Length: 375
Image (cartoon, rainbow, N blue to C red; front, top):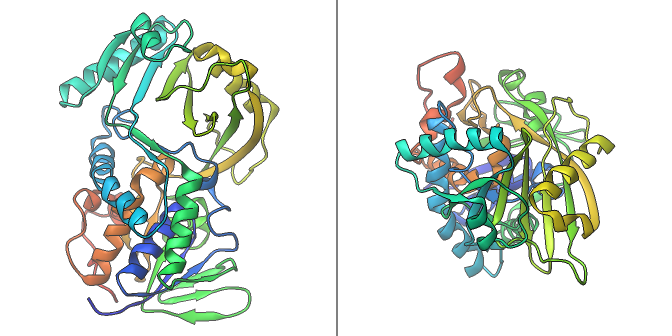
């Protein structure tokens, strides 16, 4: 593989994974972001690696890509650990719970779908769920999905940032204001590179005209809590639920921490946390896990997911040679390994990972494949 002078625009989980893997492969890497690791949606994410729990009829391409990336996650985590960095990957699975009859009907649609495509998801009664997680409330039924695990998103981001720097990646703490083919412009200067990867999440549409209407921001509010003396500890599994039609998830953290999310709004680039959002999250979570009402509230935050029209990311070259690695919606953490490996494949002009061909950026307007070699 010839050495490439690579620019990565954006330092969330996707940009950092790309930067680390590319630098480790011997490329010269420069990352543009005013606030690496901490400035985007990845910092306020729940950390779920859950392609099966996210599955739904008609979204088979997203499921296949998510599962391909999940298969790469153990090696991804091992390589980080071997470099001296822990990402907080857990092997505990996921519980999907239904609160009432209507929620149970929706859950049954998912169960039948997963069964029909051969995915492991075990139906459990409400009583069975409470045996598995004693803190659960009056849930009606649920599914156990052992393959869907979780990671500590903030540990992961700090690990990727440190690993990329240890491999020689350079960080420019400025916002990219314009991409032109092989050039990245900031307020202070314009620099040329052999290749440019656009991984700016929800802001990617502002930086490239082909993505202007393809990537949209989806606001999500998240709470961080911690159990107190005398309260039940958080669940061991990720608990995903639908409570009176409202989705909610609870993801444990070490030392009694719990991440609670997530609302979803079409609100442009607004990142204010609303009182309504906090109330809805706590009310929904309390129905599923009543003890959360006595937890200490540590943090409220909002992030902007990078949504796409079909819930698939945009992975591959744009018409001017910029590589898109954006539009990951709820699955940026899950898809980080497969996205980073795809970038390495583009740089070496080799075959990218299975499933990424369905995510090419031109899929909305054209059925023709774009040459993925470095220009």
